[in-house]
Length: 182
Image (cartoon, rainbow, N blue to C red; front, side, top):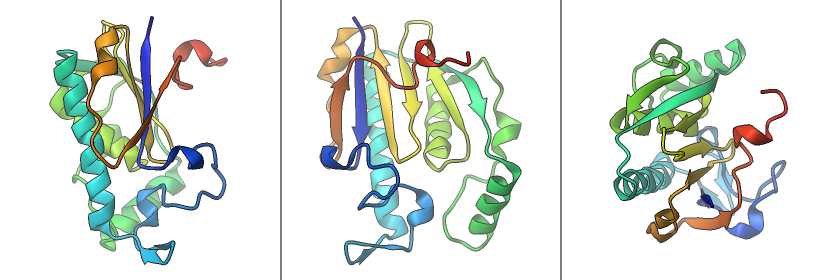
């Protein structure tokens, strides 16, 4: 049996409110006001670091050294221009790399690079599935949440950092077996 965990900074009550969530959900929300407070880059990066902590723990717990990147989807040209404009104006930092130049479908990358790619996926630079030969996976959602999964039930013992919410599920909605067009 698979263990799948959905992880989000958002409270469970907000999950599923895709069109008008009462909280921030994208890096492009930096500078906007939510519940009377301006979202700062520092606050956004704090959450992002907690997400990367989850990946560190996931990799260590399951002894994952590399993962394959598949089903890569790059944003439209308009989205890429928007991302570059925001970066040049200093709205948020990027890592100084062109995502399309470093990604290839089906290539395995060390977990150190998977963490970089994960951050770029959180920042909506691209979408992809991350997986390994043992059935472990990471799927990043579009509203600052993600799924980790494994065939190994030890995943259920992972320690999720304070301030993040999580839920155990039967499957990730991004599971390839659920996609009709594949």
